[in-house]
Image 1: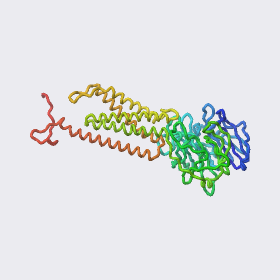
Image 2 (image 1 turned 30 degrees about the horizontal axis):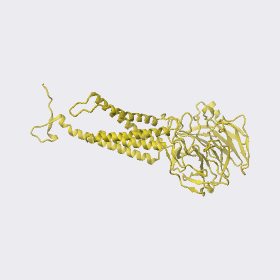
Image 3 (image 1 turned 60 degrees about the vertical axis):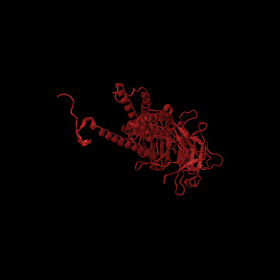
Image 4 (image 1 turned 90 degrees about the horizontal axis):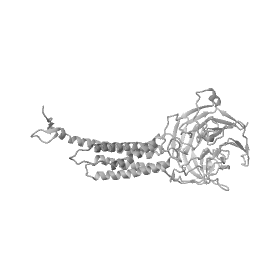
Length: 534
């Protein structure tokens, strides 16, 4: 949808029967908000689609990407001229004449758009048969695509310096070269992560740098975002609607229908504000179309979160950036828990604490009678219980293929190795007394138990390290984890060195003998003579 001083333009979407649409409508006489819709669909138009990126600039309305019927995804871009009411596909000449011309991969659920008066159309991330990390820009003047961030294979879900692949996130341009995104679903197809997410990122297209900023609104997917008209030199972005309670969420604070998020693009600060209404507020909804108008923000359609029905109503959030900043504010919600958080905590407690220190006791405290064995057994059992519970949380948290990415595959292997350890222990051969030699079965069992346990622990610690990034954890969380991991490694290294030193001090008696009549010090030992006949 596109807004102007005297009209709105609406294209596509989904019908009440959930079929993609290709019709174009114009709503005129917005000055008094008493206009009417007019169907201007002609023979030449974009393919029917929904979940597209849209925006308007210089009397033109643009749409790009999107999803059609039978899960068809698009990477084309079209321009609608309000004066002639005609559609034209852009970049088609380059596609036909230049075989090496760059085109983004087809997708839907992306964010972006174009800043009014600018010639740069942004498309950020999105989803198709795979997840997309990239940010691409279409130059309206030259009709050429270029990728400006995360080219193929350059980005992954294990780096905290840019937003992870996502879809159905809110986004808008706050200046010709600045893209703001919020939330979305990070757990889709071949990635794991929060769904909904609540992180906020700003991309500078000139420096090509992402910056994550502190967030405030409740995490959500399918939220709407648009700029308010400027007022007294202020510029603000409104975030409204979206799905806040998904199957991944354990507990959240749902936003009321009269609350919006307000973002200050200069100071990069979020705040929550209460709106007012002459009669009633719009019903809670998601996947709305929002555009800037002369007197506020227009919002069309979406679907009702409570009933699930599609909506076709048109609303105006009247006001500018100045009046919005002076409205009633509320505190940022602090209560949000999902299965990813539960999964991470259980795995850190299970593998990072109980299993690690249980194995530590078994390796370095065997001289303390049978106490070490029972401590080792108790800690391992508790650790495996936490691991199983965490595994269940992981399955519940992933919205698509559970083991289609590195963290999921390694996690499954760790759980299997962890479960094999107690099963393996049940069939352990009897430990011989000090005077007897270990049987071959005992030697083989100890090797399997040691290698299996060590492999599981190393993989678990590595996977937790990956997981703190997949989970989109805040810097303080992964800082604490890596400091703790460093302490674990340091303790293990020191303990191993001490154990080696103690073994070395005992070794002289094995291959040296004391010189007769000398004091019992290491300086008075000589090599033992080999027994036997020369």
